[in-house]
Image (cartoon, rainbow, N blue to C red; front, side):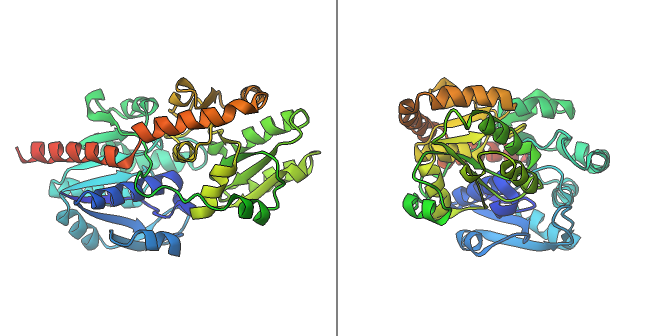
Length: 381
């Protein structure tokens, strides 16, 4: 089976969860003895990710812009890669590269599946541009897909709004790599490097962007900082446009020394942050199943996340709590959790058991392969 994965970014420093999902699926396909190519841009592609991509047939191109990705790639090169594949799997939605590949697949009669990862709804900036994109290629690209991959059940409604039949949507969740887990890292060194006191800290791990809700977490923390005076909070992740405002809000509060912004982290440093944190908070206003929640589970760290993340099982298995995406709701949930810190380690253990039993990439990839083969067989008949 020859699979071509397509995404705008492959380095999580700029591509976040969609980049990581593409990378993990591609590597898992290779590990299972299949052929896999990845077509992406080289925007933000660092040495750590380049090294991790060794063994994967990687095809990169430059982009005219980082915010609005305009890939510098010829139609002939795109067509060649599509011709060589048995099936194409696109990640994300608002993508010129995806549109080029899917158009080529339609011309050549090649099957393709789409995984927008929660991106179908128009949210945030560039609403007019996104509506134009959908009118030009977006709706057609989604409707003509052989199958649509939803990351959570919450996402199914987004496909139906695009005119997709319910039978053409399957839920394929995010996962964790059971053979190469995130390195644990040195917790003492992590605290020293970021000048964290030897007291508990809450962790935000993601892009500092409105959709990820760091402002909601900031509001919740400030509302309970006096009551829980021993706690710090760490915001780890690249700036998505909110860092300056968040820093100003922290500086204007009475708790500035207990709020840290440490930028993007990966590898052992990320592992150390997840292991050392008392609690991971995922305050997203919208999320296609948080990968960092799964990584926290592997680290044995409990999670508080919003009901917009499509991972309510966290609460059902006793691995954390769910709240609505508001500072008030988050404050209530945090208060309930932090009032009984002795229960948090046991919550982390429950989450770890649940994630390891249900969300490994080897299991998910086996299912994807079965789906790919069914699609290719139906295409030939």
